[in-house]
Length: 323
Image 1 (cartoon, rainbow, N blue to C red):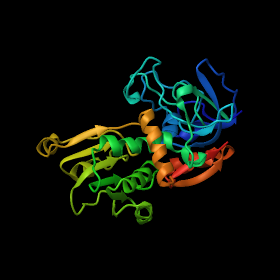
Image 2 (spheres, rainbow, N blue to C red):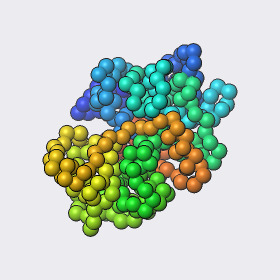
Image 3 (spheres, rainbow, N blue to C red):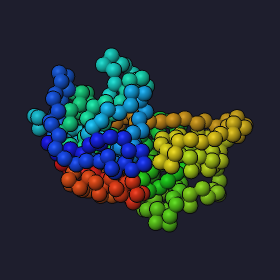
């Protein structure tokens, strides 16, 4: 089968580890299902895998097929979306807290292939009124955005949220979901083009990156990392919450504890979401008609072009590959 895979870890030149070619079709263990992939989307995590960056002490075993998200059909023709959070068979409760949680392309092969194999519970039926194209982008960026907004931020309708970095797939999801939920949405971007796009997606106001804001905000959701860290903290109102969901510019930051203590700030991380979050997210999109912004749709054979655009910072919205 055709697949997009990483051959080794290449921290400084990740595209040198990227291959598009034939791989063996995966076996289907008992309790698992095979999904014929129709659409699969690109995530920053795929670049991290090429670089050898892993959140697990075991590291990554190469070669490995890339891809965290996807949608397709089971062998019986049932349309499904892949819920990417996998873990211990005996774990009960919030899947994101399972010490052994992982997603496709970490310990098992990923979704950028003609077929993917996942545990049966991870193949979630596709709701009516939700296309496979849009469903294929939900499992990582959109699921993380949903949980950050509706669980971690503690925002209420009408309150003000700042979204750092307005042009990536995560930020566009946050803007669209935040506007639909009735929050007042502000966003930052390095470029005027990015600010214009954020407004088109629903941001009420936009600002240059790290620009002082006219007033403090109730919550900040930050996927940028080190470059926006100080701005995020200084933008919070007393009692505000910073939800950090990524670090596209780096993860190493310094912290002055005094304003955190004096202003009673909350700093929390958020990653992915539960299966219930995933179902709620899909139902929200199906009911409201929100359509995730798709920046590019490419055949799987042209995956290198999509990866190069992400690595060079030229992506706008989500990149989706058709299989």
